Length: 141
Image (tube, rainbow, N blue to C red; front, side, top):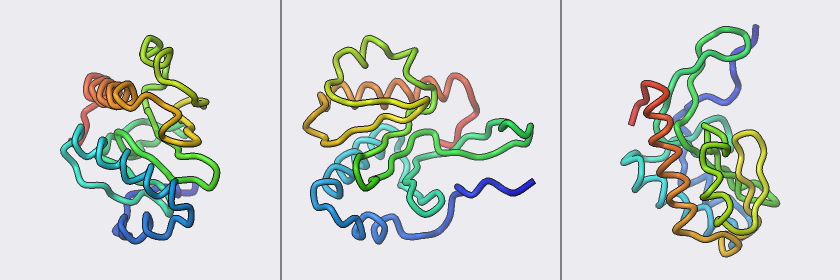
């Protein structure tokens, strides 16, 4: 079985963020990075080629092998900023109702522009997500 492609590496987070072509997406990315750093107390690390992660935890993946993943992460994609909320969104529905304009996947929060969401609510969502990950897993934070 092939190894998970998205692994923590020594690539430069600054260089990656600086390479984001869209000025607004780059600025939004930096703003969310600041929040994640404050909440986790960790410096960002690159995971794969486009994921900026904070902390780490080990989970058992679908192949029944342990794998590492960041506790919370983000990626400045071409069309949206993607924020990874690893516990998913069900535990946080009251916050989601106040967040603003977004869409979600299983653990992905997609934001077109940061001003589309209520920043204090986003901070609370990230903070509670990290707390839930600490409750569920042994985390490196």
